[in-house]
Length: 246
Image (cartoon, rainbow, N blue to C red; front, side):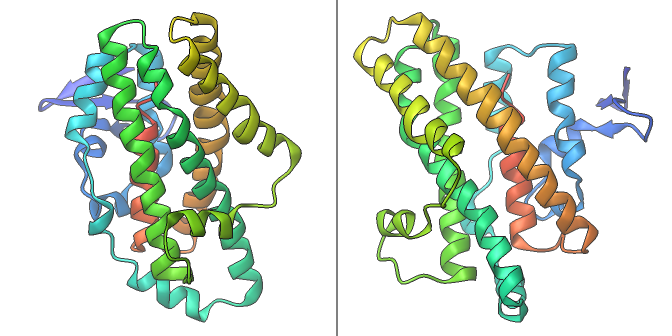
């Protein structure tokens, strides 16, 4: 059920109170600390009810910009220094999967832009590529300022943190996605490869794997009263970016 009040768009997607999507959409990094991940994901539900155009998604991207450089990880660093070995290992395991996944997607998106069947889709997918690069930089900043590393550059850091994941993860990120991107790079008119790649990226990786993990991690931080941490605010911004997937 949707309604309007004082120019705001409201979306009631569950029995609990309505979600102010306009407030979520314009929230700064600091304000994102007061926002739940489920409310951010309401953008997806609204999109199902009324599918936005690709230019609508582009305009939303313009209005939801944020900078990794504005994130303060000082409280996160303090938490890290006070954490025990088990807590650190759990955090590193989760962040490895996300950091590596963001970089893998960033490195394979360009052929999808080249293969876009319309200029509007091309514009939208270009914003997605920028988002994924920003998310990669977000995790690099966390690694350098919170966990710490001697890696000289991102190449060394990615080698250092590559997760010891299961076969399915490796097939998805190191086989299926790159091979589909290569097919498109070789033949941008291969529409079957384009559809397969968009399905892998938007449906499997973003909507299923990433958003599920984001929700678990962010809700856990909220339950622990850690919503003022740089990671919570930045990761919520990441989730908001990815909620623009049509």
